[in-house]
Image 1: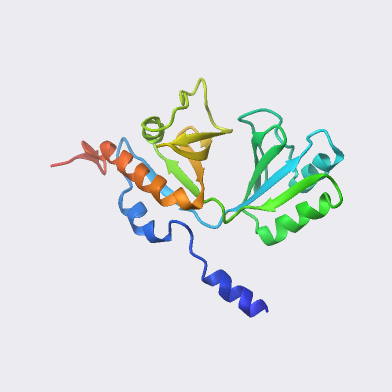
Image 2: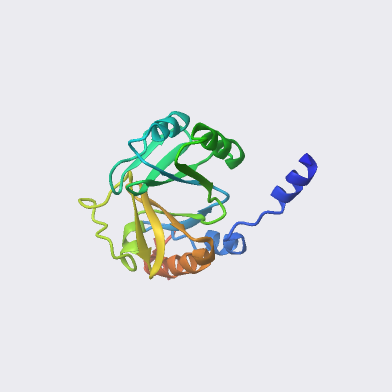
Length: 209
């Protein structure tokens, strides 16, 4: 059984496996640098629970951090980040194995009015990083992305090029985008197209000939 499981894991393909070379080759370098990459096989868990209930407190003990209470908030501890999606809904994004995290979360609320669902295969994670990252997003995202309105440590449900996704800013020039797996290639190709403007004048730090 263990050999079969290992074999199946080895056969997994991320939603953007076929674009790996495109993502690498189309990175923009130089002063206006920006690049797109995929965080493959990221563990994602949907939580639904009354935030005032004992079950919510039990989930927080497993995660080592609180469930955010306000729109846009993200809480993090170690390998886990918890994104607010609604008054009683959160998305856990983790670098730990779903095989370890999901059973632990489910066991903590066994018998309670709560839902713990592994949604790792439902989305992928795209990272957009670089000096021009915000300018790229502004081409197709309706949010006000100015630092006074949206900054590191915030995540919201929005759209990019009319595709619904979760947008999470993790640093001054770094964003993670979480589209449904079925939309991942469209979003990635849109991002690559939007980045090319910033390679037109300078590339690799020098003026193009």
